[in-house]
Amino acid sequence: MLHNYQSRDELVAFLKQKSIEVRKKIIQLVVTAGGGHVGGGLSMTEILLTMYWHILDIDPKNPKKPDRDRLILSKGHGGIGICPVLADVGYYEESLMNDFNQYMSPFGMHPDMNKVPGIDMSTGSLGHGLSVCVGLANGARLKNEKWRTFCILGDGECNEGSVWEAAMSAAHYKLGNVTAIIDRNRLMIDGPTAEIMSIEPLEDKWKAFGFDTKVINGHDYNELLDTFENLPGPDSDKPVCVICNTTKGRGVSFMENEVKWHYGGLDEESEKQAVSDIEKLSL
Ligand SMILES: Cc1ncc(C[n+]2csc(CCOP(=O)(O)OP(=O)(O)O)c2C)c(N)n1
Image (cartoon, rainbow, N blue to C red; front, side):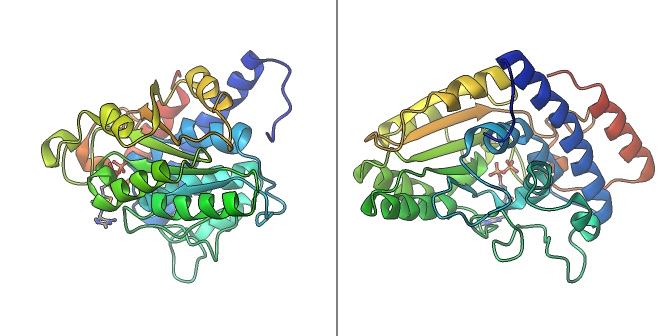
């Protein structure tokens, strides 16, 4: 927990303010980069802020602390969503992102664990994050260490067979130190998940694969905090899956629930509109 707060209300107010600031930063990065995966960046803002400010046992001044909790962003195209959050909690200065996705910048569109402090795994090719979590979690168990592993996956990403192999093995090895978090925004790169490759009943699937599974509103800080503050703990024998219902493009009127805003660029007028929408966002 990186923020000192007196009450839940104070914490939620703090996080809501961060939601606005981080979303505005995402828009700025889209402009800097000339385009970006903005829809799926904006859908996970509250999940990421909850994890990095409040849930993860981390030290941004010591990013490789051996007993830190690990978070793998398996939907690596969400780099534009996670990098501002890592700056916000203090892994690096925000100004380092001034050349985001430009030639020689440490910040590519998909985050690189060797260049971006706080990134626990380089991702971008979908379907691999959960397998790495399982390996890390198994390693922690073998060494009797108590740190936890978290993996954020896209719902479209759940089309990948490797996600389910990893899920099976997490349950088989009784890895209660693994938590899968699904950004359930119902859209992928080229259409709605229900049309491209139906993954329903998603909750039942994760349950059948041996995960303690919960469905929550991924933009509601109270639901996020209630869920992640009350995880069973690294010694439990069942992995956890939290399906977070979210809105792709959340906070920007012309992006919300629009497939075409999976990836896009912004001209001056649309940038202004996006910022003005975000400033009015009520969570
Ligand atoms: C193995 C692999 N196949 C295809 C892609 C191309 N791709 C990038 S994003 C994306 C859609 C992902 O959808 P989802 O997981 O729902 O992400 P979100 O909507 O949250 O951005 C695809 C297919 C990829 N990155 N990796």
